[in-house]
Amino acid sequence: MPSRGSQPEEGAALSSADNSTPHKEDLSSKIKEQKIVVDELSNLKKNRKVYRQQQNSNIFFLADRTEMLSESKNILDELKKEYQEIENSEKTKIKK
Image (cartoon, rainbow, N blue to C red; front, top):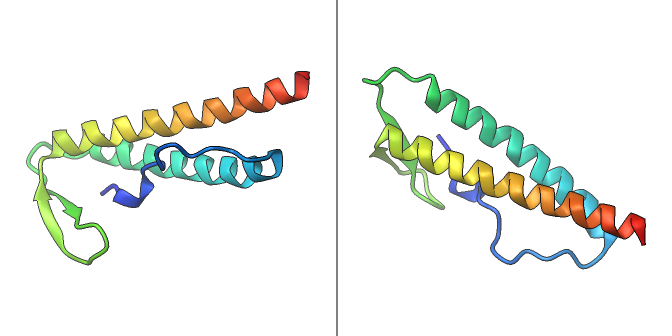
């Protein structure tokens, strides 16, 4: 089940090159985690139940498997996009 905490922060900006490496590593681990979530949801049988954890609590609610898979793929795409932006900004800094 995907964690709501795995979504990237909106408007997260890099202030310096020193800051980008830990952020890049964090994004990389979140991408790996999200890939596993997508893979697990993709391989579930159609009749299996999926639960979503309520944010900041230990309460779980029944969720639609296809919606969760779609949402997880969207989160993965956002994380990859943010990671690619960091890669591109580092390449431009090196070229200058």
